[in-house]
Length: 123
Image: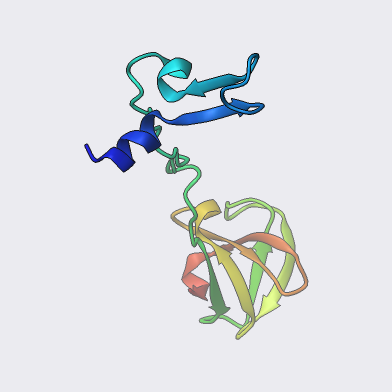
């Protein structure tokens, strides 16, 4: 090891007062951590992304087609209560994560949420 590197690794790191004066404390790396002065390196910890925390893109645009008006229902059932109707060519947001095999979960531009049959929305 070069003399400069050795001095850097073993030289004084904590000095109180003037070196050589009575009552002055000089600490070296070895004195602080013992003879094994190898620094411990701890890797940076990054948060783990789990599937439930992972960002998803499950919202997409849809448009009503294949009918004149479409029922927006409270539940994803063909006999569910009708919240409102929307006309053909109305644009809606479709939430795939809340949708079923037969019904899309939708939100209108007015903020009304509900379920519409997939057969009548092009998403």
